[in-house]
Image (cartoon, rainbow, N blue to C red; front, side, top):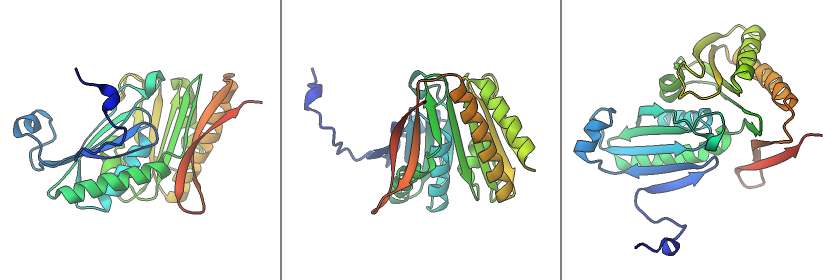
Length: 253
């Protein structure tokens, strides 16, 4: 029998790249088994694979992968939304990228881990539900794959749980600015039966950003109005040395 207590928390396996906020892990497989690769439904072009997976959040990690892939010689192979959020109403994520050179793949995963600290900066989780927002000035392959974003255009994302809050947020966003819908997802459309309404939008950068900000304001008022005792806000902030994230537990007064 394996003595679990003897296994170090400092993983030294070659597959391990690192972890970051929201129970996110980054891994690399330098040469995936041929038989397994054929079953994965990601094509057989690449044998060096990068894996990016989390229990909580989706848009932040996908935006991070989007930027990481644009900066490296890698491609997005698949993006899935597992039903998760550690028992709450939303998703986690499972992302596979590939490249010809394992060093490129590892570098992309390293970048994505760092960028997730920044891009996961608008996630609110309470006892009653959650809200998630993200913005990209120039969408790439990952955001196109996941949310049908238009490559090169500004992209905004919003998700609200319970789903009714998400729909009001979506309506507010569409009325706030002249933007285009790239995706609309509900508990039975495009999600893993999560209790959310999700909207992706594209268009002029200022219009997209304004729409997301309006949706955020409405979403927070509705979620806090449900009477949650507290909520958790994951926020990126600058320190004297680097960009970090911390969990802030704020009591409703």
